[in-house]
Amino acid sequence: MCAGEKFVETKNNRRILVVESDDDVAREWRSILAQNGYQADSVTAIPDALERVSAGGCDMVILDMDVAASKGMPILESFRKESAGPSLPIIIAVNINLRPILVKAIDVNFDDYLIKPVDGIELLSRVTSVFRKYDLECELARRSEELQKARQDLKQKESHLIQSAKLAAIGTLAASVAHELNQPLAVIRGTTQMMLLEKHHNESCNTDLETVLLQSGKMSKIIDHLMDFSRRGQDERTVVDINRTVHDALAFVHQQLAKRGIAVIFELADKLTGVMANRTQIEQVFLNLILNARDALDGKQSPTLRVRTRLMSRPEDIREAHAKAPKQIRTPINRRGYVVIDFIDNGCGISPEHISRIFEPFFTTKPAGRGTGLGLSVSANIVRDHAGWISVESNPQAGASFSIFLPVAPRWHR
Ligand SMILES: Nc1ncnc2c1ncn2[C@@H]1O[C@H](COP(=O)(O)OP(=O)(O)OP(=O)(O)O)[C@@H](O)[C@H]1O
Ligand SMILES: [Mg+2]
Image 1 (tube, protein in one colour):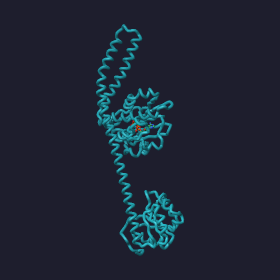
Image 2 (tube, protein in one colour; image 1 turned 30 degrees about the vertical axis):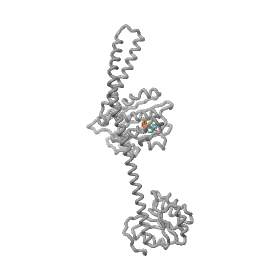
Image 3 (cartoon, protein in one colour; image 1 turned 90 degrees about the vertical axis):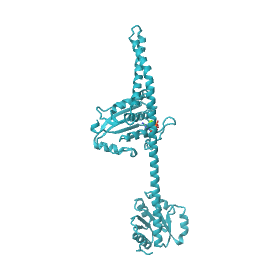
Image 4 (cartoon, protein in one colour; image 1 turned 180 degrees about the vertical axis):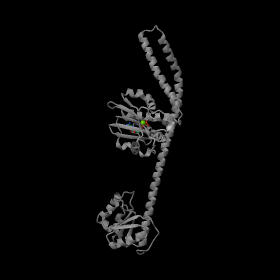
């Protein structure tokens, strides 16, 4: 076939770079390729070709091995390394008298070859078939990525389900245990109060009775809390007072934190706007973050957890915070603003290689039996279900700072 004849109707506009030292050959190939809908260009030297490839200026290279031979076979790998895409298609062209070069090049990775002099039909059919193969490979990679994502989604949903089922089971158990404990405790408290009213005890006995009353009062509060926790429906959403929920979550683990010498500093905003939320789930999220901070503070000097609540309503602040949210758990912006809850600890921090993975289900750095790696993924799912997100910042050894963004409820709900 001669230059000027058309082989197939193609309007694909793909860019082909011919690396060829013989001007006549380069011109002829460019013309054949251009006639058939490709954008063909040529260079004569390897450095120019590599520069073009690294700038993303072509979709395929046809490389004359006369030019390439001066640089040795590894030059093919250099082309692949320079290209930004998954794998740049390369066709090599070899003079008929240089066949041995072709044999050597077989060890190296290329997509097809041409033996010069090249017939136009052959040139086009090789180019077309290499592009077809390349397209199929790209499609395969895209589909397997989709499959991977679907599997990950499924895994996440599964863990969410497990967590919900666990919560429901704990709720039922908590309700029945709390109910059973409530009665004997009421008897203990009543009897103690009556004994305190009797005048004939000595002072030390009265002090002991007051201790019993004080401690049983604390038990009664815990029981009330458990009953409250289990009574609330799993999907029920109401206007939630976030400051109160922070206190409730901390009340659960207050003793544990105190025992480890962890100081809790509250910086809670006055008159915080309410959010429409499921209180149980939000409390669960707070608990997960508090327990993570507890673990991260293990063995640290002056272990401290700062819990801060604030209202974010300036559009520029919202945009900035939204841009910093991890992509996989980011939800669309809510123009009414966000109630933000920060949990800031001065614990061990998170290393840069781990920080992008902490929201993955089952990712944990804790020893077997200490962590399931579900806390943050479940929390991120819950917050996402509430149209919010969780952000994290951390410097290893300097602690971690988690921020939960929950959208402000519409005015008629507040
Ligand atoms: N405040 C924190 N400081 C340092 N690392 C943290 C902090 N919070 C989370 N991490 C890291 O993120 C990982 C994942 O946390 P996640 O809560 O999902 O699971 P886990 O705490 O390991 O297990 P569990 O399922 O019991 O919560 C942790 O193993 C830890 O490496
Ligand atoms: Mg955890």
